[in-house]
Image (tube, rainbow, N blue to C red; front, side, top):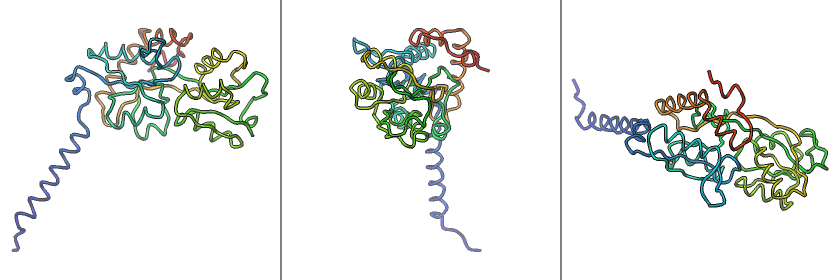
Length: 267
């Protein structure tokens, strides 16, 4: 009988142990880590009107910011708020620079491939807007027009897919998109009603209005994959604060309207 040298048995065992430890680390319980640290790092957007932005005192403000504060309070830990550009929301989560994202992230099939989402905590409508003088009723009317969008958003995806004959201008954040519309760099935009309100405030003479709704999306709190306990806690937190009305009150305070009944009464 031929005996296998000990070194040939030990090396694979060590390799398996290392891989096992790495897998365990990758799936470490983030909820316990947050509680032990006494702090939760929550990313929000830095320039999305009504959701997440800096106020006139350069302090974080918006419905997402208030929701993040409530979540940290209910979890019993301090809040470390991280303001990021729209395109950096998912990368910030995946690179572990934030524990979760409360940043007006629409729940989409593409995003669900790489991150998890909570039960919907809010909603967002995507719209096409332009001056009142422009006759625009659907995507066909956008042919030949220059349209501004925020990069790496569902607006970008929807407009690119459906406005084949338009010139798409992509901007890194909502604030830059708003500026481009106000200053006339683009003549049409795809964004949200809250951004339309900001444009109307900054340039009332342009007579900007919503032309048509592209789509309505549920918004979810973004969580890294393989964090079942953290996701369960956040799902329960969302459902509790939908049923007691706190999340609706936050949304109405900033957006001037109630959340849809289906969002306020999760299953």
